[in-house]
Image (tube, rainbow, N blue to C red; front, side, top):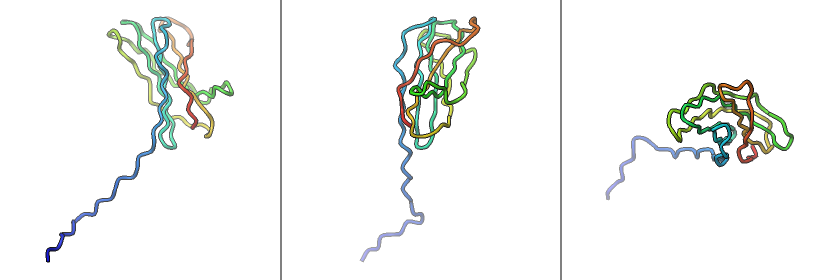
Length: 134
């Protein structure tokens, strides 16, 4: 009778990875030569926000991204910023984040993105990601 050898190491199955939900806005219409697409990502018990932009060659921009409670009309986190992002070629995408954020659970949130051309004095505009409940 033939015996099956016992392996020297017992392999355990990998734990299931946390489910990931991502909501990114479709690219906005151009404004100040820029298009925007903010994102909100929830992975298990963690939430992340990201600002994305495309711009004209030679454009320099500061981006701001924050977690926003659109139903209560209030910012939940301090703005996170990336400065002096430059577009070197047509269609280039600049990314600011993923930044991990914390906030009360069970509330629908969006990532709200704003921008400022380097020649401007204040952040303007505002585009929001699709809403996700965290």
